[in-house]
Amino acid sequence: MSHNRQKKIAVINDFSGFGRCSIAASLPIISAMKIQCCPLPTSIFSNHTGFDSFFYTDYTEHMNAYMDEWKKLDLRFAGILTGFLGSPEQIGIVKRFLELFKTEESITVIDPVMGDYGKLYPTYSLLLAEQMSSLVPYADILTPNLTEACILTGADYKADMDEAGLAVICKNLCDMGPKKIVISGLERGDNLENFIYEDGKEPQINLEHKVGPFRSGTGDVFSTIIAADTVNGVGFADAVRHASSFVAKVLRRTVELDLPKTDGICFEEFLTEI
Image (cartoon, rainbow, N blue to C red):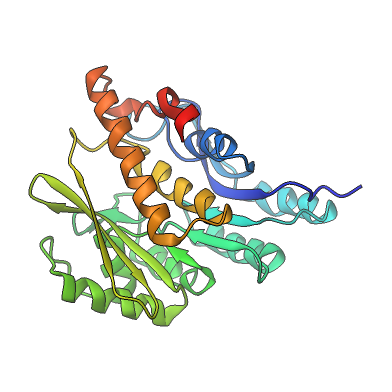
């Protein structure tokens, strides 16, 4: 009996039991969008690293055996979504996964989680950033922030980069493989901008009013909705707008509830509307 009668998205990311990020955010959202979510954990956290303390288990040594069982089942994925990867070895494992499971029909969304505000995250090394660039050719859709887009292309980081500069960066990323790119979370005064670039089309701008401070998991929700919408046949620019407006709505409610920044965004309140 076939296991492939329903659309599936494989999500390769860490799992945090508390904090609403990574797999814990992607799984309910993909499910609510009527797609089966199949997680492959890279590591397991009691709660994410934004907290003062946490329990952590690296899952690297188990990932190959885990995916081999999926191959035995002949699982086929309409989408593949990758997030934070903690070592060059994990990047190599993800490449193997893509070589095993990526098809002409599947849509691969790579969120190259590496840094923000012009700097690599403390847990990231230059070697790891270089290895991340080797994943870019596998992507159909790439969802970097400006820092990550600059790192991947070797461009100088400028927080106030104009549209012409963004277009050049996106063209360079496009030349590496992915034909659909969104540079997310650009600060424009009281607004956040998403710069939407599709090969052969004029770039588009999506603006949402900035609500409250940065919160964990926001990027995971954003890239997950784009992946699920695209698998469901929604156009790329419309998927970005949907993700952006959903995140903005959830952020407003999160501020109303006065949730701690570490606790992520309360997307559960709107899952029936997604």
